[in-house]
Length: 93
Image (cartoon, rainbow, N blue to C red; front, side, top):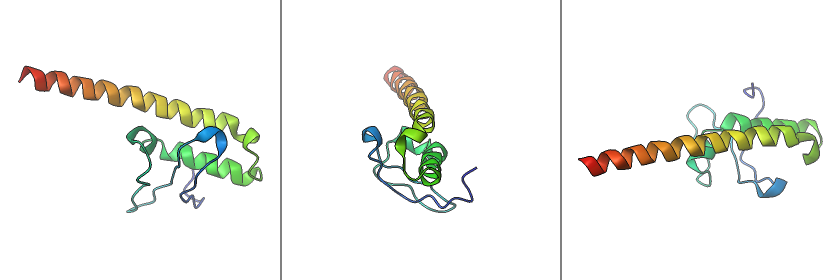
């Protein structure tokens, strides 16, 4: 998808989004990313690609931004459930 597009770390002014970064092979991600955001790097790179294609007009990329946000929300729920399960398991031991 975004492999041909050289996404680099950037900070978006779009609705106060957190910074995001494309992590190529052997590269580390931004220390500013939450764990859930780090799992949605491909989606974040699509935002950068959309902005580049549309002359940085953020209104043209709202659908892609919503796609990224839904990815982050899904991962936040999944990670929260995983932590709760691990905590419950630790309490029983």
